[in-house]
Image 1: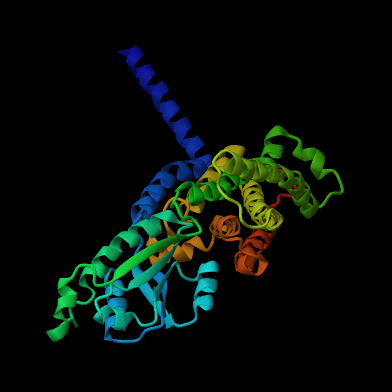
Image 2: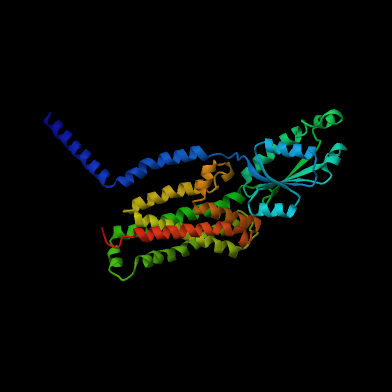
Length: 379
């Protein structure tokens, strides 16, 4: 009985001791408990491979009730959000090159005449296949358009058009990725993903590691100011980031035969703001966190949504509007677009510029936070 009493006291003592540890290091336990719930919530809300209402342009060189009915039939599938109807093919191609639209519907001249003559005219549907998932699902939906588009207006002497399965033909063309291979999207995505995870974690343990190892005292007694410490830690890791960048690029091209139609120099220059943006997040985390473990947890918590919202795993067009807005906060969203556009579309500097400056803004904001939280004296 007495032994049991002492054991109870010892257990109670250990219990109180652990409560004290939790109170002193409550941030760690908050991350451990909250992170899984956030991850489950995010996955549940945004996982969807079936993108709807995808930006689409119509190049119509024929205007009639038939073409209006066909365009409306494309809308009714819910896959195509018609942004504009134009006759300028070059402007439509430029819009797809810049990523403003994912599909172009080409309706040729004399389409209505050939339709009435029962000559089975062709409509061309071009899709930006740099993201194969979007293209595949939308292409499958065109079967409904081909069979039902004319049902509402094919009356009287034209009733034969609705009864005929091949009144007109929809040809599909997967642009930038004719074979619709998943690797063409996956490997540029991996370039952004691996750099995000590796660089953020690499820098996250940097300054907090100095405190834990005791070497921070040496830095504090030198005349080096906080900004010089931060930049000094960034520079060698930029070099490491480029080693990772070129290694993934070489593997993608040589082993998996992902084509590279654009400029290697341009993509290499565009990688610089992405690398420093992720390093700046890591060093901001390191300045805020008290331990390497906390810093690594914050970096891990950041990496998951950065990958999830970038469009690498699931098309951004399939995400809710709020998720698409949130994705604009992560550098990986912009660099995934840049790498895909340069590699597959041979995009130039002015095409990718809108995706470069947000990463530079991210870098400036995070470096400012790092400078603000850098601890000039030991705790």
